[in-house]
Image 1: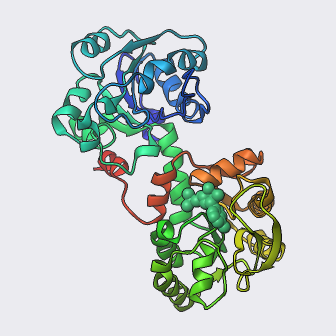
Image 2 (image 1 turned 90 degrees about the horizontal axis):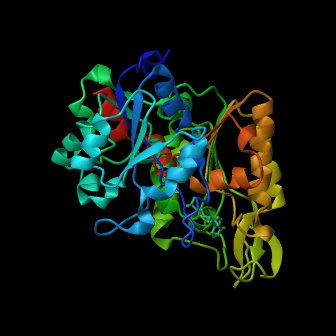
Image 3 (image 1 turned 30 degrees about the vertical axis):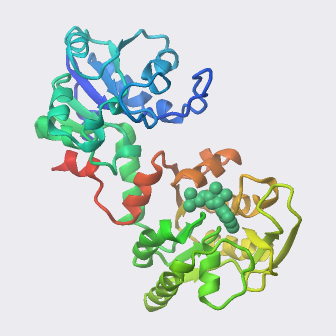
Length: 399
Ligand code: AMP
C-alpha cells in the first residue's frame, strides 16, 4: 500500500497542490476540458472519507501582474462542487493572508476550501521560500497531486515540502499513478520496448531521444521532426518542416542509435500537400523524394504498415507526439493508424503509456484513451521524466 493510501487523514487539514489549470471559454468562463479536475477527485475523496478536510491550491493560466478575473479559480467552484456530489466549496479570494488563514483554521472534517490562483503572486513561480512557508501554515499535511507541474521548482510544487516533516508530506493518488506508470517504462520496461516519438520539432525531442536510445529497442520517429532526419541523410524533402540547425544533431542521434543497436524507424513514405491547410491538394510520395513546393504532413500507408508491425511486436510502448497534422482530417490517418496499433498491442498484453499534450489529444479524439494502459496528464513533466531528469516536485517529497 502507498503512503497516501495508508495515511489516516481524520481531523487533519490536508493542503493539496492540484493541477486545476483547465482551459476556460474566454467569454463564459465555462470549463472546456475538466480532465485535470476529475483526475484529482479520488485523492480529495479519500481524505474527506477519512474525516479530514481539504485545502486546494492551484495555478490557472498565465497571469502577468497580479490578479486577473479571467484567471480566477472562482470560475471552477460550481463544477468542483458537482464533481464532489454537490458539496459546498468554500473559497478564499487570496491564497495567503488573513482571510485564507481564518478560513483554513475554521475548517471542519469534510470541508473543502479552494484558494485563489497561486500565480497571482510572482513569488509562486520564483519558488520564494517566505511565500511557500505562508502557504504551508494553512495545512497539517502536504499532498502533492499536481503531476503537470512536477517539473517546476515553484513555491507550492516543491519549495513548500520542506516545511512539513517527512511523514506529513506525500504524493496524492494521481501523482503516485503517474510516477508508477513512468517508472514502469523507464526502470522496468519489458522488452521489446518500442518508443514512438512524433510532433513538430526535433529540437523539443532531442533529450528524450538521447535518453531512449539507451533503453528502447526500437524508436519510431514520425511527424514534422522526421524530415530533419531525412535531410540529414541527403533526402529531398521539398517544403517539409526542417530545422537546418538540427541536422548535425539528427546525424548524431542516428549514429548513437546505430552504436547502441537501437533500431531507428523513419517513415519511408509520406502524405504530402501543396500548402499547410485543410483544403490543400493532397498526394503521396517517398519521404526522400518530395517534389519542390510540397510538404510531408503525415506518414504514408507503407510507413504506417511498417510501424504497425514493430508496435505489434512490443511488450512495452511509450508514445509521445503525433505522426502528422492530425488536427486536419486529410493528415490524421497516420496518427490514427498508430493509435490503433498501440491499442491492438495493448490488447495482446503490452504495457502502453501515452504522454505529452498532442498524442493525448489524439487518443482522446479517436476514442482510444481507455484502450491504452495509461494516459498521462502531464505533458512537460512526463517529457522531462523520460529525458531522465529528476523532477523537483518529486524530489522535494522524497528528500
Ligand atoms: P509537438 O507539440 O512537438 O508534439 O508537436 C505537435 C504538433 O506537430 C501538432 O500540432 C501537429 O499538427 C504538428 N505536426 C505533426 N506532424 C507535422 C508535420 N509533418 N508538419 C508540420 N507539423 C506537424
